[in-house]
Image (cartoon, rainbow, N blue to C red; front, side, top):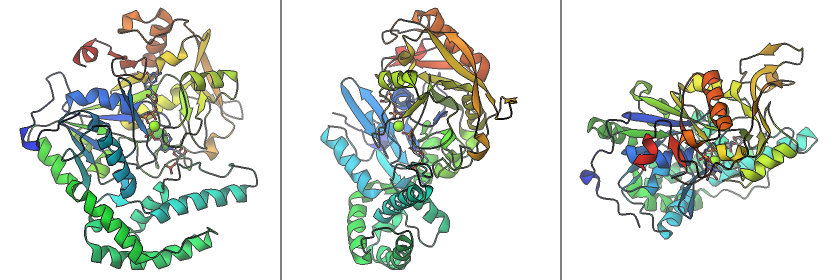
Amino acid sequence: MHQTPPTNQRTSASSSRSPRHAAVVGLQWGDEGKGKIVDLLTSRYDCIVRYNGGANAGHTVQVGRERYALHLIPSGILSQGKINIVGNGVVVDPEKLLDEIDGLRKRGVEVAENLRVSDRAHVVMPYHKEQDAALEELLEKRSGKSGAGQIGTTRRGIGPAYSDKVRRSTALRMGDLLDHALLLRKLETICGLRMAELEALGANVTPLVPRELADRFAAAGERLRPHITDTVYLVHDEMRAGRSVLFEGANACLLDIDHGTFPYVTSSNCSTLGIPAGSGVPGRMIDKVYGIMKAYSTRVGGGPFVTELLDATGDRIRTRGREFGTTTGRPRRCGWLDLVAVKYSVMVCGADAIACTLLDVLSGFDELKVCVGYRRADGTVTDRFIPDAERMQGFTPVYETLAGWGRELTDCTDRDELPPEAQRYLAFVESFVGIPVELVSVGPERNQTFERAGGLASAI
Ligand code: GDP
Ligand code: IMO
Ligand code: MG
């Protein structure tokens, strides 16, 4: 289907309208539709760079009737002639990456020189996934009632892999997979220690055999060899040659290890603050940040969620929005739009504009609520987000009630075609958060999106 021209034949995609380098980042707890927006914006950029997370991400792109779920590979892979970079800040499960590559190729998507993986990205090994699951199960047992103490991770080994990165002595990087002797030497040290740790967690452990693991992952490394490179020089070379870069955030700002609802977060800096460290590109080189916000709130896994709806309204949002995880299939927790949280994420990420997704899901409600403050247990109210689960306990939402609309929005092609109540909903977001809603998405498909000034829709 897609034929990717050799790198040296590419021309710059950036037009005078586009910011040179931009980022797409989730402003809530993930699944805001980042994949869809990245796919849409890809036509304007030359390189798409993932800088954080791993196979915990699930980015859906719908192209006509074809639906793709991308976990490790940037969403730009579905467009021709782009370089897709998995940066050093990503934790890569090599076998999952190979499955993803094979799955795309089977569907006619070219994955060749257009995919580059950092030699310094850390490796997610099978024992990381066992450790992730074992810790979650242990927390569940200890907490006494099901799920209460768990983070609710995706069990993709993300936390343990990042822990090893920080610990250094037990870490493996993608470049290590290209040297069997080095990999074996490292695994001999790692495996003994790892067995002791897994046993201490009470895990039902399969013995780790360094040589088996070395053979298995060196084989994966051989298959990935054409893609593995120093992506920091690559992205800077591309930028110097006048090419434009779009950074694709995985997970979302409120799951950021430093700025999210700790400890119910993931283990990377998924806000835009992770871009410099996770790609090697200084933050000042990014000209524009698109914050992706779904028109309501969802969250998967544990943690504070002030506007959560545990009633028929929440069920209705879940059903209309098909809110089931792309990665794990878990039902997502649903609730009204929390603008206190969104405004905080806009601040932390330096977002310049909002892309509001899934607005169509809100059709048919008589009225809609948006959260504009939090009431603490002692009755006082704050308009500040507090990224700490303990300190958010007992918070209840202060709502503003807005009029709903009855009409389905999926055929709208311009902001002016939206019912006046939907336009007022977006205007309320803009005035509360202080930045414009530049993109509006009313369905999963590429063409179910319009730009405030009408520019993007015509560029698709
Ligand atoms: P991501 O992780 O941020 O890329 O988001 P996910 O792919 O996990 O979840 C977003 C879901 O919403 C996917 O199933 C998309 O196909 C779908 N989607 C995206 N934008 C819209 C929209 O505007 N309306 C509707 N109804 N679905 C959308
Ligand atoms: P995308 O990129 C939604 C959540 C998990 C869990 C917590 C920690 O598709 O938006 P982890 O496995 O990372 O240790 O889990 O973070 N989480 C996500 N939730 N979308 C995501 O990614 C997520 N990535 C992690 O559900 O609560
Ligand atoms: Mg997702």
